[in-house]
Length: 456
Image 1: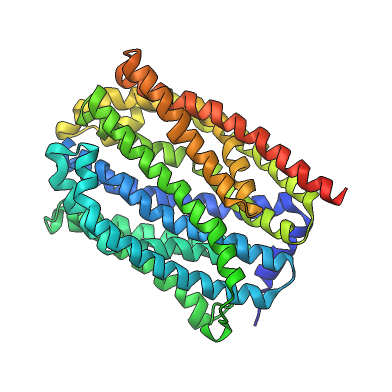
Image 2: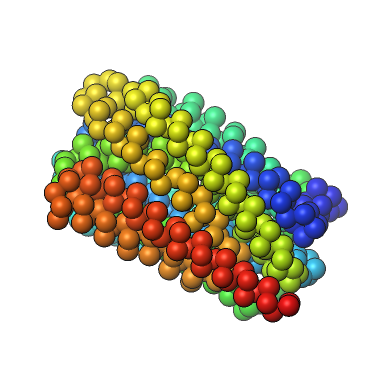
């Protein structure tokens, strides 16, 4: 039996892109918030172990982002390919592509795991982990050994997004987050495993998500798309469609990890490991604050891909502009609230033990960093337009331009050469985001108009 809800979702993406965007975005906002809370919950519990433990986990954060990046990137590739085939009214090809997606996820995750096991210590040393490397290694080795589950759980969401279903993944993530919240204090403190306990809780929670998703695919069998291996027939163009968005999207998110690693090294140069603790903890809060913008952008991929497959290019413009409008409103609200309550938020992570010493710097970081949120609203939506039309390389370039290019440039200029130190590094993020996000918005608008001229 086909899922009428999912079938209706596909029709909604083609007939009313605004409504489809909102319908898909709301569960995605909840899902991505929960995903952000995974790291935040770990940080909150680990902070009780002291500032060095928090910094150690913070040094591993860029590597953790690599795993999340591959999962989300491959999920974006699957969502693009599946939505495009459904827009072309080729359900059989979409079913086949869903199996391609799962097989690619597993293969790539095993390769990534092997690579990270070899290079973990050199990466941490290069980042300047120093006295905190023991904590970083204890936490990191367990996460890497379980990375296949982290990558696969995130990538499987792309299959659901491809058919326009973002609700059931939300339920799976809520259940997983609750489990993670229960397991963290047990493994960290009751079993006296410290940072290793936080890592074990994260892996168990990821496995739990996979079991829930596989239950819908293979036990209940009530999804619209059927990722059954009986539907598998290798097609080079399907793999190409998934990879041409999925790999650049992964590299795009890997660049985020590279930025975090370079930025952590910069902070140890102009500040101290305490500044890294501030950055890694503060960035988790930034991630939560900007989650609605990322959720809208993620939903936009499927909406645009479906209309791209159906050659309804006017709907792509409608969806893009609507996504920017909604995102800007949300960004202003979140920025104001974060600025006003910066001190209260910081106190959650810096109120006990040696963590107290980072409270003032964390408060300052949160108060200033929110300046760029409204420009991120247009930048995210615009970058995801390119993923939705299969131009993954372009989207990747835009991200590298934003972070490795403009942001690091301004951070080094202000923090090192002009002598503003840690505050200058924070402002480098703001300036880099403001400049690059506006460039991306103009670029996306030009690309959409170019598509519309094809039909004109």
